[in-house]
Length: 496
Image (cartoon, rainbow, N blue to C red; front, side, top):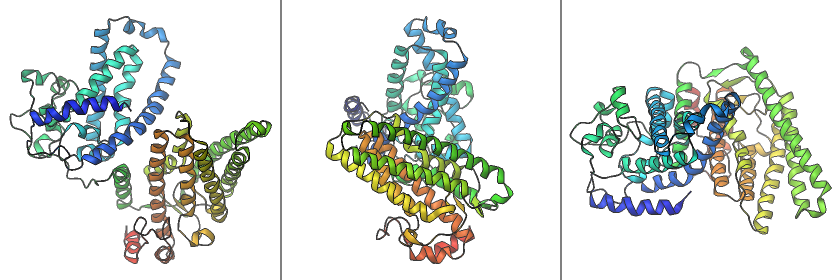
């Protein structure tokens, strides 16, 4: 993140909002200002990583199928024409993604995080769910990359887009006269955020309001909005806002129709999932074996070789157990229906792989030893928990059998607690802020997985209610963070 650019923008917009405020009574450090700052710091890495994976994957397929020379004519255009072309193409893509995010209920659950803003200023533009922004980036930037615009044109577009986004959300009363029907402005975008019936689903463009004119979605009355925000119960903390869309989707899936589905009636999905996991974890195990072989051949030259060897060997053993228990696991008695439980489970399981493509930062020897110890301890504890879980192991939330002995007498989800140590250790060993952000996101998804498992287990095993009332969820003694399940919770879960 370019903190110098952020400081420069702050020096521009804060005085501007003081000199020409739209809402004169609004404070600089307004309500939820720190929340938006948190979004700015954390989302930068999550959105960049996700956009690189999604858009980069699409571009790899496109460049393989379409020759590079097909877009030479675009790069031959003068720079000013390319910049205009990028602005138009990207904003048409943005308009499409934005309109879909309002029209499709599942996408709206992610986009509503951005619309939860109740006081507008330049910082508000950063409050956005990473999935929402990745989706928007894909539809707006992929066509631009496909057309082959030059790097200077893309850089200029990025600068214009970022400055425009901050200006659109700013608490300023600057108007641009008749140009408001051509170019997006604060008065135009503030109406998009208005929590008023007549303004719903209007003003979707980011740069060119003329696209809304063509699309029939323009709304520019002479007065200003009375209030901002949404009626949806969007939470007010960053971790909760990350999980909010998934929680809403999960709740709706379980409230409509039978929330459970017998896997016996759908053996194809179980076999496909098993084959996928075996393929992925077998590849990871083979990679770990190769690394171990190289480590043994260069053992004397590797600092802290014995500790690193222990980390790699324990990782290999854990992967071998995962493959074995996946092959021999019990058939599921029940599982949660829908796409979201499976998506959350896959992201929670594999998201830390993104750290592998994140540039490393030099760390001190003491921190490297500490991070490796975290990985070793976390992996060994994971092996112990997985050995006790045995053939009940599953990535997607499923009820195979109820295990309450061994480490499961201490907490209900000891495997996730152990994996948390490994996740922290991996982030520490990388050292970059991006790695820590990925780790935080991964931990959030792991908690979401644990809660989904609570649902399916409580609905399948009546005795789980008493077990949940006795044993804390993830950490003993931290009931404020992970409260014990009450009888009332159990009854509510069963009724759901």
